[in-house]
Length: 242
Length: 242
DNA sequence: TTATGTGAAAGCGTTCACAGCC
DNA sequence: GGCTGTGAACGCTTTCACATAA
Image (cartoon, rainbow over all chains, first blue to last red; front, side, top):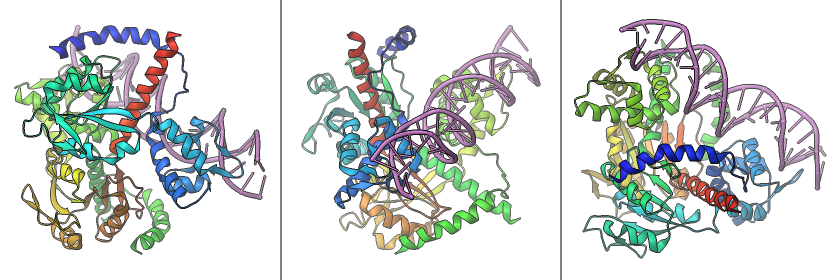
């Protein structure tokens, strides 16, 4: 029912949104998603350099450490500002600070995780979230044998307490790691509670009203692509052999 | 040392590879990675339709079920061949067969997982691999307390047995879910053992010789992008309010 | 001279719009 | 008439190449 409601709203909100989009000012210049995704990689490389007491780095060296093209690195960094010195390179400490600021280490986004099966538990334990400025502040699962269990000191709470958890933590970002058939219902409830960003690990297409951001992670997808190339490589090999 | 060896080979092999690439025939026309990644999504939607005894489907309906644009769906399917009928739509059973064939359900790729912490365990339990034609045939971890433990009947084996596991299973695809500092060494050993496709969950840039395919999955990355948009949306909102 | 910052070009993926076939 | 299949347009991302600044 909630799903139906939100779905009906979609058309309306889309119209509103399209109208608004032209008027909205851009206080921060838009940084491409692809760049945003790479910033933490750069940060990790810079941290290693800092540990090795290296104070200055050229785009070529940093790019290699991050596994990208030097031009790409420079373009990415140029979206943040002009933090390098021509003829010299980038100051490791300063660049670290600037990227860290952008990545939002300072922000400490509160995040809740719904569904604590193997994947959800892995995510709750995942240190990569913390290092990127996220803090897991709520764990939700309907299974009685899981409720009360603690992960890093945080207790898993029943699905019925979802509302209270979202309200008390102020989380605007949620991770869904439930089975496929539960995901849409959870998403609907999250949206009703004011969550505006959802990271979906369940193999389902979530329908949400406009204004809510959903990103999907499919663990099998990359494996699929690898297998396709593997298959092609073998076919080519045999084909060339004839 | 293995890492150094393989790294030195890279330049040589790249030259060879570039020379060859023009001569290689393309037995199968190249399907974009983005399309390959979506095929399983279509398959899932088709399976649901088949269960509901629906025998024919239009691109519009199938696209909605898969959460994509109808034109995208048609273009994706057109890479596989002309399996639809103009004025009618697609035959669910036949299309299911064709996509299944391409996706390689028939193939049952053997895959090994190295590193069985929370994430590796989640992956070993993940049903999405199986449903896409992958079979987890080997589990490797150096921790004595994990060796011998069984997941779905498959025992975790010590890192020292890696060679034997790869050889006996014939796995050409491996998943690395180790801590960052162990990943490169594992990758080097895998490459030496003939593994040609690696899915890397560790937050490190892996260096491998040309001819080996690596794809990286970063669980924090998508969350990062969500947070960025969340931040921007709030900034815009406040900006518009003034 | 050296290495950044950035317009311009190239590449890739998505969406449009309609020709072509049922 | 209806819906697929696909060239063309569009938009996003990557890479090149060089003007610019230390």
